[in-house]
Image (cartoon, rainbow, N blue to C red; front, side, top):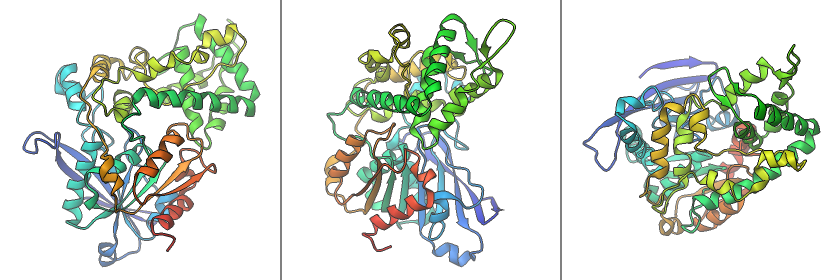
Length: 438
């Protein structure tokens, strides 16, 4: 175990070997990485007495936060916890799963089979193995952000004995068996439309810039600095920025540098091309595209590129028609589409693997609704009033289905409230989970 110091922090590295398939514990092992964070200045004995808080990152496919000093929610957590930042399987410093490493598994069939073990149920079993190795039978607190919250609800369903309390930030999934993957996206596209129009109302010039970009991309092939082909649908995916507190402003600053005058007329600026490559890249988290729709799948049916299929039900998102009819070009968001496997440089080598995952059947349930209805673990959740990524109505329905769960519904924050509101959001969640006892 490696230990290092940062300003106000003491960090320790942990590595754990866990089964790829928890149903076959004697089979292949993969390695997980986690980083312990404690406040500096505490003695070894004081650190040992601190309870543990496990942080589950949003995603899927993203590594845990990399702290530099005390700030945000972590600052509040360190007042009373030892914090464990887990790189969920396939992410960060855990055994990687990307275009460079997946060919080691074999062909696309073997790769898709391997990735079928990367859903929330496997992540929860990983967490339980880690908990027992670190602290034995003692339970810990789990803080789940976004997809990490989905994992925490799976945790409540399958291993509540490992939980002292659960804190959910924008992470209450739809657990009703009647809400399939298509239904998730049927609620998402209207939210995307609202967020887009609200952005244009804030920054009216951006509507004209997006229309100009659509016209340009219709007539010109543009390849970004990382080899990604910038198409009109790829441009529209900039709408995913609108789900965070500063996202609308970030989008505006990105768009204001879109064009530069040249001898051949206006062309995409190098600044814009470079920034677009960074925004659209999947090099660091290809699992987001490969596994996104599987996190909603519970009914045994193939997801079959649900976001693409459902988009056809919302013709207002057709950019070409929007130009022809002099309407605003609507932006989309946190979705995965088959055309990305052709346009995105980091995804092209994984095309067939992604297709096989989209065609895969047999996805089982991730939540035990009967057990959740009998829940005895203290749970608190912040629900963002118009969350772009997680449907508010679905979250409220789930909140009513989990016995004892206390909610805080707010429009003060967007989906990144646990980061933007940091200490204040976590403090409120802890207050709720302790029934207002501070």
